[in-house]
Image 1: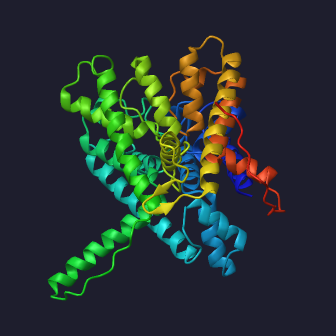
Image 2: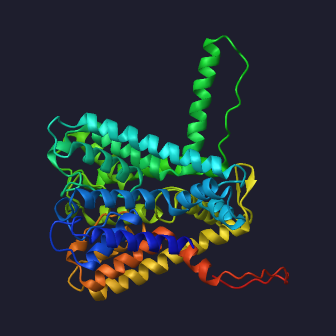
Length: 445
């Protein structure tokens, strides 16, 4: 159902983009499908110039596809099913609980309402800040502001500018750069954490008001769960580490000629954007191989669970690392924050990592065959960019053969829906086995 919903929106989007009023010149069905998949899967890879190939209507259609794909089809279907059918099925509740990493199924409608309201509030605020930062006579000022606010929060990386954000007027606009970076972080940190931050902010404001009124009775704040703590820690760690290595690797390369402040801004923005957004403020074709492979690593990890971004997710990587560290130290159980991580969670972590490597590996081999004249490192970068729904391209997707574009389409779709979700849909058995067998030790080293 989940995968089918994405496919339905993709095909509807393809048809809408093929309308004569949506594009300016010739647009093939494959390029229309590619654009629709890239928008719904919030990737940002393009095979035609969004600025010149699509009319204002076409750009608005892409914007709507990004919004639907970013929030997730289950968010909308879950929300409206509660409104129009006075509830939702138990199976839908389980899927929504899994999708947003909720600990219980209580008040799912309240959670969905908060998610929608927070999303639109953040996007409107971002659009207003971007609008205010632009020159008075900036072309398509309103569309540019709204489009980039939604694209940034949904971690899509689409831009109405031919050079993305790599232009002098944007390079000198610090307000816009910071706004886009913050929108990317808020969209990629995950809705469960976002709702928690909203609760803490509300608690802080209420506490201040009560103190001003002389009422000393404390207001209980919402406690962050273990998952949220991991997400926040990993997000900060990856941004700082990524920015540091970007600065070290590119200071004498693509950043040459910039002052130190500009180098730091570009490095931080590059680290934030690489993990699933795909906006770029520099000519990424100038990157050296160390930066390319560092970015592949960041794209592979991606955003956080229940977010608009892709990748294997920050919590998956964190749990895999802790499991490895536990094994090295001879510990069998994984304890985090006075809580034991279940064996089911560890199994899912290992499965997700294994599937991500296998799928990107197969995609890489297929691209090597389909695009023999391209740099293999750039094709590997392309695979992780598509699978991680990032949208950065060193191999220039627009020059790909039909086979190359189809491979990208499959990688984007699998990366957004999730390989585990797709395979579980095919192979999940309705019959559960409760038998227990004797344990054995198998030689693995």
